[in-house]
Length: 145
Image (tube, rainbow, N blue to C red; front, side, top):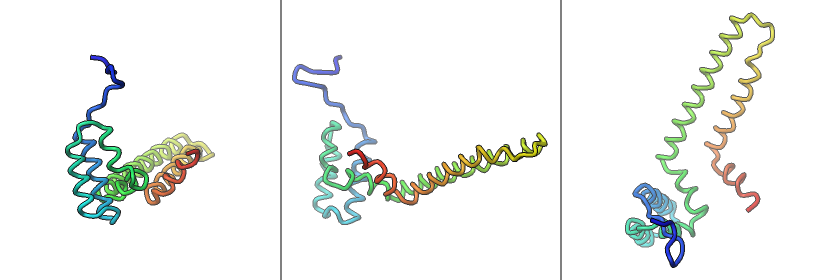
């Protein structure tokens, strides 16, 4: 089987996961008032009828950032983000305890774990900032467009 057909590149079939993501974007846009109930239902019908990926993009193209901002504000996305942040915070705390223990046992005068922990805490703070203010991430990636 070839990747191209005589008329051009082959179309990629969409998955249930991609259809559900597009439907979630549309539902979030409906709840924000960006789409009327009738328009949203019409687009949802088209999402679930879509067989190819290129049929999904036009359904969310007129929404801000393709609807990704609305998707990030859904309760499921926020819960997932909170879980990830909790996990990252516990990891940094665990590493801090281990490094402090190694420093204590080593008897070194200089508290050398401060160096790697500084970078880890700064990365964690950046992650928390992007999670609580998603517009920072969107703004940062809008340069050069």
